[in-house]
Every structure is written in structure tokens, then in C-alpha cells.
Length: 467
Image (cartoon, rainbow, N blue to C red; front, side, top):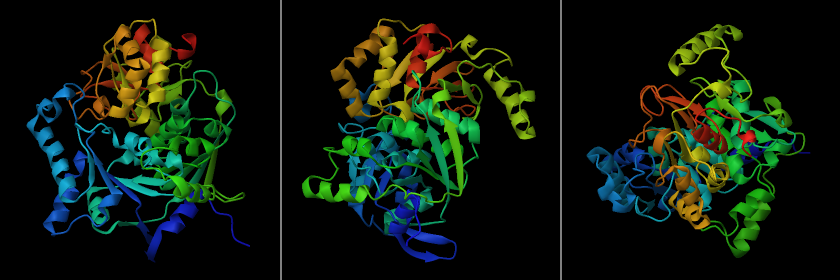
């Protein structure tokens, strides 16, 4: 009789090439690169080597590309250093015969958006990228994790990577999610419960009826922010929702290959009785729309709550961080979250820049006007075209949002899309660290619908009052 195994154990075991003390050499099925990957390509070329399996590496420009003036292509990049990085990615891809989705390519987009969108991301695969939010792809039941420049060079050269096997954390969210509550609210509630170091050294398998009820877009949001809880990766078992999303996409298997893939994918979910190193349970039915008040993703609360005081925290480290966060955010303990005014609103990123996110925000914005500067950057050029075909762009622009091109935009703020110092932004991004959206910028993480609600009222607002 075989020992029941988790989904993570199954995928890990299938990809081990060899082992040495404390580590395993894993085969990598998909490797994504972006314009920040030039260090690894340079190191590879310096040794006179080329990419070993070019058909398994895919390149796109996302972190630094401008979201304005994109109709000009490369000529629209005014910063010579950024233009050089984008051109270098094109050069490295061409030299190594890698598929490159550059700034002018119709399939360009944020790497964690286009992987699923094109069907490159599939169940059971190991996936790497030089970006921490690679955990996003685990929503398909893949083992996906971020890597550094030296590891990327190793993968480009060998298609393998040495890894220490993480422990497993089972996060079970059961119960029916309420009106106005989605993937972003779920993951912020999870991080608030376990903390930003709560999953350090672990891979999270998300499970439970609330997780299964999420669309693929919702699951992608949850796994995207697993890294914010310190996890090596986040995963959701594939099911009919997964297969329906994948079927027919450009790089998904076709015909008999689809049938064989589907049969394998159905074996991937964890076995009944499989043991995890830890388990955390959350009542999904009790969740409200949730947002951050501080400068860490764990400093999150339901929208009906008030700003906490440092004395509300028992741990000395949390008390100290709360004091610093309150000062940076310009907030006073006891203030109701819904009394906090905002100065800007941003929708986009690999967390919440997908078509479902834009539809949810547009549903709030339709017939209303924003009262603060607001912009939206779709997660990919394909999503932008789809949204325009559905008329969502008109809803956004008539409400007063600026409709921009695809890119990481104000999440990483590397392309000039910054929030001015001292200004408070309702944002769908994934990090609210000091200066994340620009030096001195104050960020409140929340769902796209919540951002839309804040944009039309000028303050943090319970989106359920506008539904």
C-alpha cells in the first residue's frame, strides 16, 4: 500500500533528476524571462554558452515598459537606459532562438498574466522566472517559484535547478464567499492571519470550498500573493475550472495530446489522507472585503474595521512596525477605514490586471465619475483588446480613468508610473512596502472593485454599498 501524497509531493517527485545531501536537482518545464534577466544572459554568453532548451524559455517585456505612448513602439521609450534593457532582451532572445513577445508583439503582457493566457502554464509543470510572483502559476496545479540571476543562468544552461525541498502548508478556506468578496480578500485575510513570515520555508496548497468556488482569475490572485506570506510557492489542485480555462488556448495541448494531458492532470490532486507539515483553516463565509492599512501585506483588516493602535499587538516587533507604519501612512489609531480619504486609484498588475478584474471594476464605475486621478493598465495587450471589444475601456474612460497599455506600471513603479510622495493610493497591486509605488507614496492593497469604489467616493469604501 502506497503512502498518500500531497499534490506538491507528486509534482516534486516527478521532476527530480538526482539528489545530493539536502537538495534535489529539478527539471524545469517552463522558464519565463523579462527585461530584467540580462545579467543571466550576460553570464551565459561570457562562458560561451547558449540556452540549452530554447523552446522551453519564453521572453516578454513587462517591468520597465511604458504604459503611455505605446503606439510608438520602442521609439516611445524616452529613457535610454530602459530602452537599452528592452532592446537587450530582444537581442538575447534572438541570439538564443527564444520566443520573444516584445513591446510591439500582440501577445505582450506581464509575464505572470500571459503564461496562463497563452496556455503555457499548465498543471503538473515546474515553472521558474526571475520574479518573486512566479508563484502565480501555481493556480493551475503547477510548482512555480521565483529565482535569482545565478539560478536563472543555471536553468538557461542546463534546464535544471538545485532546490532544497520545502515543507508543506495546507491552507483550507471553506464556506461560501459573500457578495463583494473574492480572491484578493481571501489572500489578504490569509496573510493577516499567518503573517508575512507565516509560510516561510513552505509551499502552500490552498484548498476548501471557497477556493474551489473561485474562477481561475481568483485562484491566480490567491497564488500570486502566496509569496507575500513568505511561501516558496502557492498551489491549487487542478479541476474542471482549470481544464475549461486551458482548453483551446494557443500553447495548450490539442487533440489526442489534450486527452493524454487531461488524464495525467486528473491524477495530480493530493491523495485522501495526505499529510501536511502544517494546516491553517479560515471561515470563508465570515470574510468581508479586506484591505491593508499599513506598510506590510499582513497589516490587513476587514473594511468595517478601524485603524489599530500599536498597543493592540502583543509582539514587540509588530508593535514597533505598527508605530512606523502609522507614521508613514499618516493614519491615527481608531479611525474607521471608511473614513480614510484617498488621492489616487490604480488597477492593474499580475495580481489583478485580468479581464475578470476589469469587469468587476467596470461594474462599479458604470454611470459614476471618479473624484481622484485614476488609471488602469490591463495585464496584457490581449486583455486590453478584449476589454475594448467588450466596451470596458469606454466605461473606464467615461468614469474618468486613464486607459493605458499593458505593463507592471505602478506596482513596481520602474517605468515612471509613480504615485507622488505623501499621496494615498487605492491599489490592486501586491506590495504596500514604503516607497513601493514611488518615494513617500502610501499604498492600500485591495480588490479591483474596492479600488473602483474608492475612486468614485474619494475614500476607502465598502464596495458592497455600491453593488
